Length: 204
Image 1: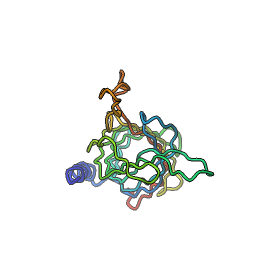
Image 2: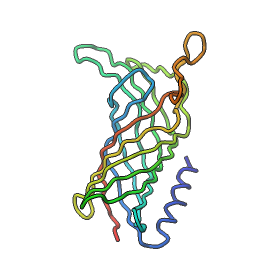
Image 3: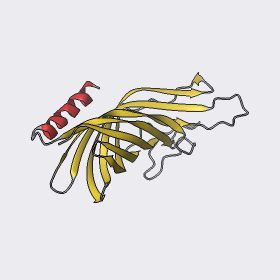
Image 4: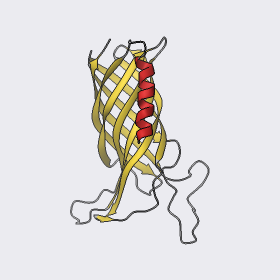
């Protein structure tokens, strides 16, 4: 994790070098699922909190963030049952790097990629630990998003993110071979949609 934090401050220092930069905080929720776990729907609710630094370039705005984010998946259980079902949560320290472009008045679109370092993870079935295949320590992902300016210091942001490579392989079948691997589907991937508020405490 120390390498991730150092990497963030190296990039952030480049943004701040010209002294024409902005900074602020991020707080909101992240809804997620894991492709390849035989469940569907963004049923896992978590946090997305952190900070950001950005600055204007000639044709776009560049932004770098340092954030804590929860991802994973969860099985929906009917209310009249006593089962807790399946729960899978992965917690990351993440550095998203984005390009933002104004498209209309107070509206922006963003495109970028992220590097995440795994802090810890939990896998349970009916409240009992049921750990499967280990999660990779580093996650690489891409994202696309939309941002709306509420006032000069307050913005609403929504982002769709997906892993570029598997966070872990598929579970092995009884013959000790992965029958679910085909073409681009090489394992399990994080997919998430987040909704956050961004507050600028420093804006040029």
